[in-house]
Structures are given as structure tokens and as C-alpha cells.
Length: 84
Image (tube, rainbow, N blue to C red; front, side, top):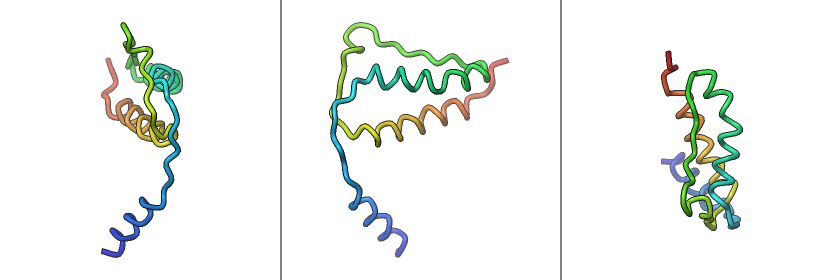
């Protein structure tokens, strides 16, 4: 119970800094950062921004979004079996 209250208070204390984030730029930076690790496992990272998808921008907390997507990509690469 004490831990739950601490985590709840900690979450409330976090600040959110909103800014415009172009998703294509964000995804391209992740591809660049994780491509060598993925290729070592025989995994090809691909981003499909066909049509208007490359122009999508959202207003969000950039640092928090980077942390979330980074964890997702890192885990996807880590837990995907090596291609033989």
C-alpha cells in the first residue's frame, strides 16, 4: 500500500512538456539507433510512411514518447528470435 501511494504521488509530480513531434522524424531516429543491433540478429527494421503518413505530427511530451517507443523497439529487437 505504501509503495502504491509513493508511485501515485511520483506520477502526479511529473511535469509534461508539450511540443510538436513529427512521427516520421521520430521513427527514423529509432531506426538509425537500433538498426545495427537488429541486423546483427538478422532482423530488418522498416518504416512505411507512404502517402500522407510522413506528414503526421502530434502534440505530446517528446521525452516521454521517446522513452515509451524506445522501450518498445528495444524489447521487440531483444525478444525477436534471431533469423537463421
